Image (tube, rainbow, N blue to C red):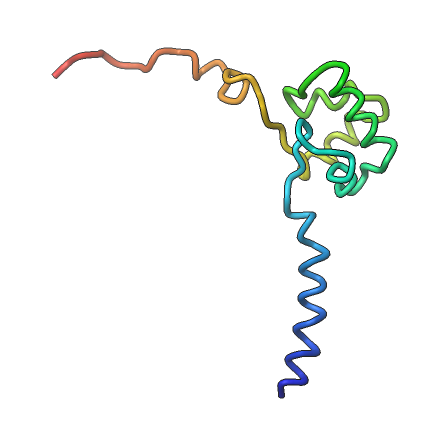
Length: 110
């Protein structure tokens, strides 16, 4: 019985290890070339294009900004979006305009 468990466990462990990078989101604003290349559809040329854009223009503020990078059209960005994230957003950008509005209802009432 232990041999059977070992035969099942090792392939499952290997499969899990291969899928692990697919579960982690890659941050467009902090990832290096190697991290960007873990995303299916981003090879060395596209990874370097992302890094060059970031160096020249600064942080990405949304995934839509990726369309400004050479080689990334709307379809490519849509396909890559589930694997990507954006950090270091300006405070108002993450929450949207509703975050700037004062809370509804009277204040100071008892």
